[in-house]
Image (cartoon, rainbow, N blue to C red; front, side, top):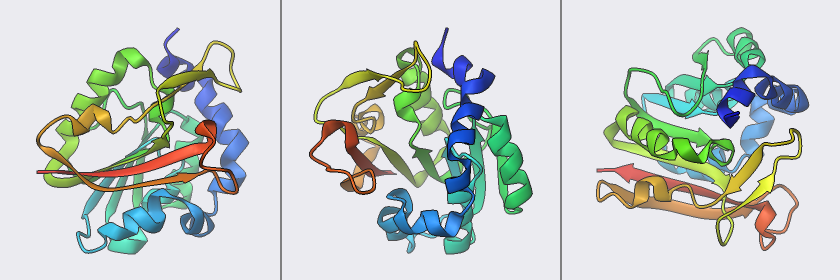
Length: 210
């Protein structure tokens, strides 16, 4: 069974239930979230008018983008429960249930992959890259928050047998193309963890589409 189907059919809601308490406080998360502080804040001169996040949970990070820049936020998220929570909580964020392989028929100034690519099916990666490129406007920014190990590998997913965490530098899905240039890259780790431990190392990569 494809992993995207597993998450759409229930594991996405399972993830939300395990993390909902932490993700309902957007102001607190913005302070420690590596994709908003400091990397997304480095885009403040660009001031994107529209931001799409894939793996948006209840849209709390998009709410941060709205407060930073006045951006209209759109989110794709496999958990219907997270989408319902965000609809009640964040009036300026639009969310829909979905996955990275099929994105809206619109274009955005900034596209964020919010710690989701490591759970995507490897057979979908070409489609995911093409969809990301399609919805990102020329001159826009692509932000990837995900695991960043020294080499590619997979781990069993703790919460569901048969599901795997695929850890790699996912920015390579776009950076090979001459239209994309590296704007900023930072390596960090889960809060309080050692970034020299491959399983804990996170990367935030910002690419600009020329």
